[in-house]
Image 1 (spheres, rainbow, N blue to C red):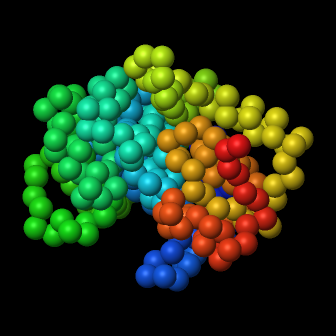
Image 2: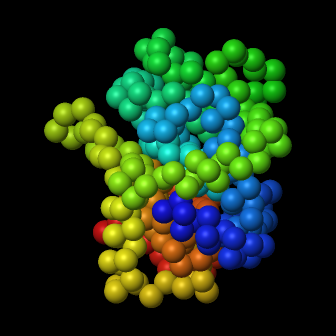
Length: 270
């Protein structure tokens, strides 16, 4: 998946990969931006000691940074895994411990509260990274850093090690774990399903016979990205086809965003 992603980014360049609303206006973000941010993220995590096969947990609603982190982590041979934003602090601690995650991505101050409440139960976690600084201007904690600081660390690492990211990406193999997806936990504690790059490539090849998705298609991302369905349709499939992903502002605005975007492709549960 990550080699296909790198190839697609190089081919598409400044073409639009994602759209997201900022201050009420849809803004476009290119494939080059996708690659650059993922590379900075991957390099920053390598600088902080993340190793191949280790996990990064992502606790956030759908947004382009989710996907940047997803590919940046996967491209260095590490494993991204998501947490539902509705999960409690105790559920968060369980998932972090079960996956033995070294780093936790947190969307905002609301989700940060869960980490602060349960961090004593997560002794193996090294660092939490917050995406949105809103309401946290005066917040300081030795175990917490912000997304812009992560990107700066990655930029510096790129200057010092200009080929390290691509070298790590080349080492990723089909049977490496692409992502960890947790079951719902209805019959016991949630279990992490280890989904490989080969698993996902098979899904994309199988889908070609059912879905005629091309680079002319537009779609709306609104289902949770920590679920494998939305990862297939809003991450892997657009990488294969070069399609444009539009991010819904929130679960409450899906129908408004649907009218604004007018997607050619829409995925939902029954």
